[in-house]
Length: 465
Ligand code: ATP
Ligand code: MG
Ligand code: MG
Ligand code: MG
Image 1 (cartoon, rainbow, N blue to C red):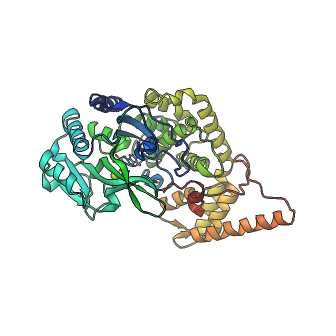
Image 2 (tube, rainbow, N blue to C red):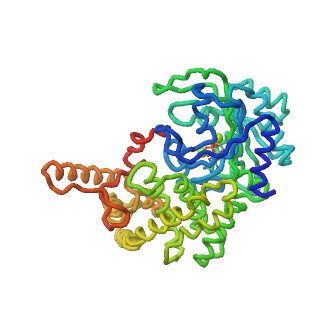
Image 3 (cartoon, helix red, strand yellow):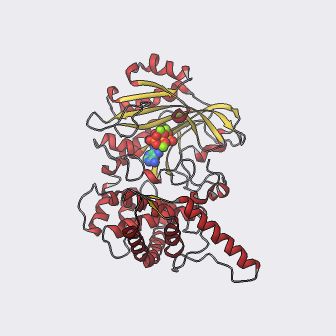
């Protein structure tokens, strides 16, 4: 079974059970300033869960494109370091809006995994929220899961929220055991470093709406929201451990490898590039443009990380845009938006890479000089600031490079320099001097950038929980 067949069989399974198949919504949530990007399948249905919007159906199924590269759910730093995290992924989901609840949600999931996909029950583990006796009873008595592969877990993993406010509730997660060859402990164990037990499906029992003070209010009617990573399930059915070895990624890794002259599919930079082209191309296709703040700055940061990895592989010319073609071949049928905006997507990626390449090499040289002289394990805040201000290196890019070399960055020192710069800019404008304008990425000086996570301003801009 290919990933395309998997997606289709999921949707068909739920369609046969009375679900309306709804096309993926864009990555930019409609009318929702609390959220940076669509980070789960439930996002387009948020108002329906809250009882504020009615649709012509009470059951739905989707394959929703998601980005987790900022805000509450941010997996950017995991990419390339785990077998299962991406900035962009597709979430397969079935939803009940006041229709069925825990029993059917669990039964459907179990039937799909064990009967439709044919996964052996001995490979599957289930968890529930520690106080959720009802879900525990369904798993143990109705499904008959082996208690050895069943766990009750606390709120950190088993109480799901979209953000700081909004719909939330206890959840039940299903894990696949990739076998003893892979390191890592079972769900709920201390050993969370490995990737042996991979969470494939989360069944959320939406029961509450959390307000800004953190109080939980019962929803008008309990709902179900489930999410299963297409890439993770594809790895399971294709018999590979890492998502990067599936048919969703191999063509992208091979295309990038061919440009770079690198044939090792396990190369970390190739994986990062393959991940990032998916996020960047779909963000652009969904209307996000590179910018100095907000969503557009997240996009720009991901593009620059990819470009830096390409540079590291020895690619001398702009290359990133060339991956849109293989991406369209992999994803175009399921997500036609990409083909519709392809020309624009390629053009902007090309432009962004060309301009960043003008300063990238000099910035890296500066960093190398500094590291050759400096001792210690932290990259000086002044250097981080100079890279940011003069060479257009977002802080997370410098941190990415630092991490590869076993170093950290001095965030506090950087923040101090940023604050000083803001103060200077304010003073200059007060005395009628030239205001520091935000300049485009095409120029060699990068002033006035508002960073996101780095200054905490993202929370002011988009409160993504
Ligand atoms: P994990 O614990 O592995 O980080 P999660 O608990 O954060 O996953 P959920 O918020 O429950 O994930 O999302 C539902 C499903 O979406 C997960 O079970 C997983 O299959 C998939 N998923 C979540 N995050 C990612 C990601 N960054 N890349 C790929 N798939 C993901
Ligand atoms: Mg996660
Ligand atoms: Mg989890
Ligand atoms: Mg989860």
